[in-house]
Figure 1 (cartoon, helix red, strand yellow):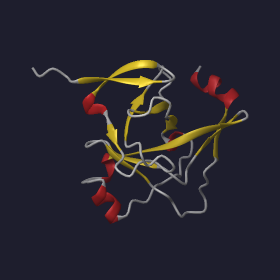
Figure 2 (cartoon, helix red, strand yellow):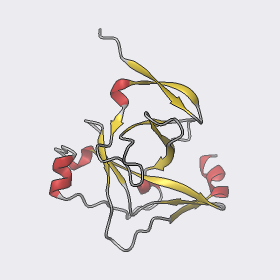
Figure 3 (tube, rainbow, N blue to C red):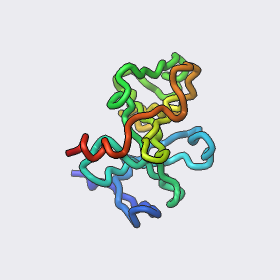
Figure 4 (cartoon, rainbow, N blue to C red):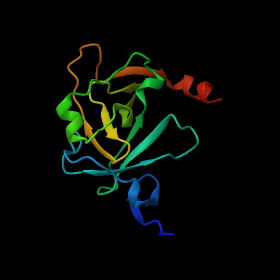
Length: 153
């Protein structure tokens, strides 16, 4: 049986973490404002699986909290155009995994629904889309922080 290749990732929040090399997600175009960082891994700091850290493999201080927007906004859909599907080499739309970057504003967690991250979950290649749909904002309220404790209890 082949040994799983792992790599050490230096992070400013969690120290050194070991991740499997085949779990690295590549964003060839980078993320908005961070075009020079193209390789990330998803870290799940605890069992509260609804929020993950998208940690840069190249830059220890660069990490985003991300979540699956469908958990909070049932009607949220990311239209994937044919050329985007080709760039991500998506054979089937169900292979597309969608995340949004989460920010905390006072006691409110907001999600950037205008700039979702779409990842081909089979090939681990992703891209940040920019949606034209005016219903979605960069700071769409997901939940109040007090509710987080109750929701996970």
